[in-house]
Amino acid sequence: MKKEKNRYIPIPGKHCESSAIVNALIFQSYFITEEQVIGAGAAPGFVYEKTGFPFLGGRSHTMKGCFFRTCMIPHTFKEKSTVSDWNDIEHCINQNIPVILRVDMRFLPYLFNGKFGPRHMSFGWHYVTLFGLDNEKKIAQVSDTSFSELKDISYNALKKARFSKTKVYPPNGEYYYFYKSDTNFSINWNEIAMLSLKQYFFNMNEKSEQKNQLKGLSGLHKLTEDILGLPKTVMPFLVGAILDFHYGCIEINGTGGSAFRTMYYRFLEKHLSCDNRNIILASAKQCELSWHNLAETYKYGASIYNKETKVRKKELLLNISERIKNVYEAENEMNCLIKELFNLSN
Image (tube, rainbow, N blue to C red):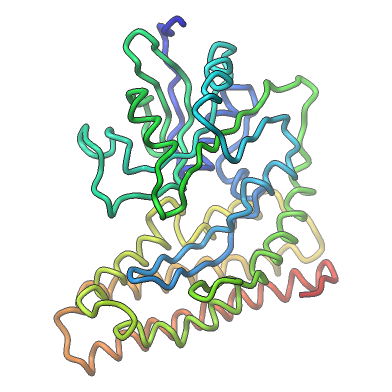
């Protein structure tokens, strides 16, 4: 396998999977933006994992499948693979077909000063796009979210990242790739925007079957109460760190801001065309603002929580609870508008 003299220059993004998809598609002559991936995938959702260090997520787990379904770009997807599937991946690279890989970010040394990350950084729902292989040096070249150049990673590290046994969303060797664009290929973005709104409705009406997990509107409503009891369900000294983590989950950690609502609003603003367009956009903007305000309340609480008295700590959590209620009300209004627009049932 020959090493390319001129390496692909990736486009930095905000979210790992949507940016991985964008770079794979642009290489194949599909000119799609990250906001279009977020929109076509109907990314907005809600999940809260009630663990010793709770996870808060604003993206639906169905984004990839929804993107596949709505855009209908020819692709191959393998949810679980084995080491022997490397032959398929290698064949793709030989054919100039980039491959999107799901990985545990803990085993990406370029993120941790050339070493593997600590155990608490294990997260197996991260995506990179493979663009090149150097079989002599056993080095792969991948794009990764915010980087404006390909990153080198050893075959051994990449294998560990792809088949990590982490309990935090194990990657299971998942990979997928797209086929080169047909010159006649086109996408009706308004039609996709309408389909996306329907999926958004279903995302927010999803119910969890797991005891320690909250989802959708009902989960948001429940969280307004659960957040008040946070000091009793986790180690008390961790509360400040958890509040800071939740700020990051909404505003920083690959969401593009406001739990994916900022990018989603921009998608609707550009592509939605229907009789109720202005009303829906106003509601989507309110969702974005309510998530942003919640994030800021988390951030403020995190900065002072561990220094405050018991009474003041309770007040901080009450403020966060009120902001969560505002998010619930904004999302519920958006949900009702979509329900009326398409005559949907819960």
